[in-house]
Length: 278
Image (cartoon, rainbow, N blue to C red; front, side, top):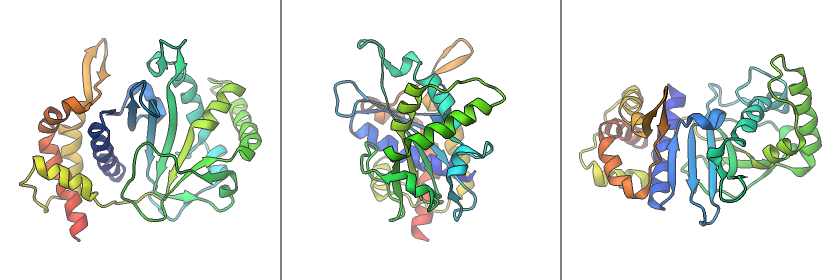
């Protein structure tokens, strides 16, 4: 429930920013596999064009840290990178994320793992802070950080990734140097994010334009249930075969979309305002 709640707030916040700038935004995209929580698409011809993916991983104990072993040896870890690599190898071959007018060049620009815990001190030796962020600013703890892998970590990264893939019982994906290079380049860790974040004031002010009657006494569980039941289906497109296509929300559809998710947003924002007023 807690992870869904964090996703709900991230979802709304990123969606506002994307729509206000004429970009495209969706969530829970089947083709995105392990990076399906939040997807931002910037149209071709625009600065930083392409697909940006975010996967949200909440840890029940915010004091825990992500070690290098967590990334490469603990197969039960939600941060186990060989599994993400396997899914990435399928994503990059998916025509959905390619520029068909440019020899099928990949349009995947970033793979972000966002979590409420940090990197262990020894693990930090493999990473460096990054300031490049097309998603815009978030309201989060002052010590929240964004990291990319150092180039000096590439040899160890390849070695550990290849070992895990070779030892995998499924053997579904082989190690490929070019794929590993690309995965290494695209991977981002957004760490030390809040466990329960306040609703950003920018978001609250925009929602109030549509929902001037917002109350502040709704519980967290109500917000989660209502948002899932009444808002998420609005991201589903047409039925094709046995599944639905993804509905991208654009600036031209903003007002209509907002009206359709009003019931869910009432409880969602109420919970957010409840936290900011405590």
